[in-house]
Image (cartoon, rainbow, N blue to C red; front, side, top):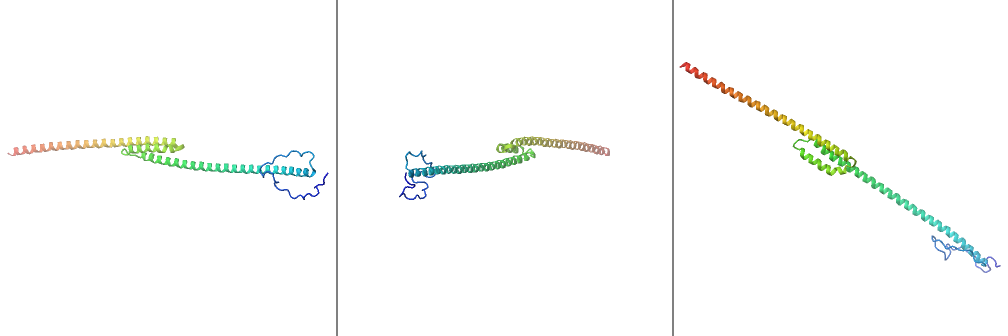
Length: 215
């Protein structure tokens, strides 16, 4: 049996990492089977060293794979987090814009409703048309307030119509009273004129009788 190491063999230095001929880090090395029978002790020693290196490389490869998986998982989690944050930001912006549009729509509708509530008969038709146009434009933007705005518009229109009817009724009453007073005044004037003419006729008749008596 030979000596270990064999006489004349060069001193063993530090093993190359990875050894020449081995796959690079990250690629699993091929599995080594059992040593061939009758292998020289020095070759057997080298064979065991290569087995050890292979096991070490397998561990390094497994650790590298785990590190890469953890990095990939971390990147995926960070990407998911950024995506969720962006989605949440976009949702908040859309919600703020929707709320702003809803408040603006409610304001525009209520402004026309308030004008309609104090409308005069002369401006009622124009304001009614303005309310119809405003509802067609703003009601789809009113969101959760659309039902309430439609109800407010209907109530405002109904109140305005009743107000116009009351104004027209008062105007008619005043006009009828004016005509009645004018008719009474004309009747009084006609009566006074008739009495005056009758009086003048009596005076003329009396004067005529007085002249006759004087003659």
